[in-house]
Picture 1 (cartoon, rainbow, N blue to C red):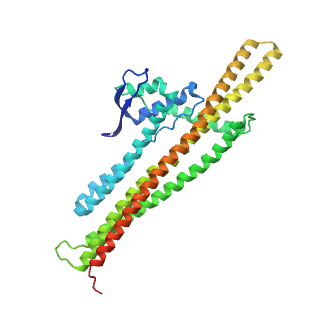
Picture 2: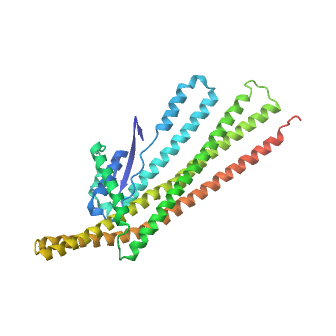
Picture 3: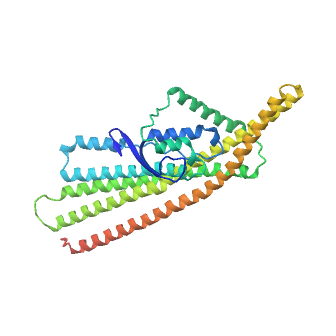
Length: 373
């Protein structure tokens, strides 16, 4: 839902979990509240061994609104038919953006609701049940700077020594290599899919301009000639074909590009999980060295033993849950790709049939026009 300058998402929840006060509830949430929930899960050390679902992208309707505003400013300078068609084009673009936005936010909540641990999170329950606004705020410059420094520190850790860390677990060694290659490949696939979608949108826009030019050649008087019939036929053909291309581009963007984009981010989240495990292993190794030093000095031995035990338990806990999460990641990824690619194939077939029918009908009408030689 659009509420002046902000986008609100209406969330309907049905549950049988005893933690919830009601079996059904409805709330409205802003995108910033989704970000708050995601950050809260990421920052919770209890979930260090879990893959936190990617935060949905921020709704971006600014481009469509700017185009609509410019169109409104030029309203008096455009023919009525041209104005109607361009408004319809903008409405289709706005609807496609809306569908993408809703889909990504819906996937985020469904991932949390279906997860055996996240669905019991207190913050998630508050997000779904609390009827008022959560009054979350955007991060301050200082908080953003801290996040940036953490990111730099993480990159430095990975580059300098965590990548060369000795890991005796074959499963995690293989996963680290597989995810690194897969992450790079799917990011390249996302760029290629975006480029293909952009080219199709450009073609659709070109067809719109051709159709508008042809429609302006049609005389407004009721002079029916073969030239008028031919121009009308071509104008209608390009208008219909352009609409099919727009729908096809939107479907490819939603089902293909966004699928790649989502799993590029989700693979990054899986790699973050491996980083946290490597960090826990490094902390355990450090605790072992500190214990050896404490025993050699015969000083603070109990404190060092407690720290070593805690580090060992944390590393084992993260490793156990991480293995389950990564195995589930593979299964979930295959299901997600299978569903979206099957949906895309069905939509491609549907649009191809529409194009064939349009071409056939246009050729039939063309044969009826007596074009002078």
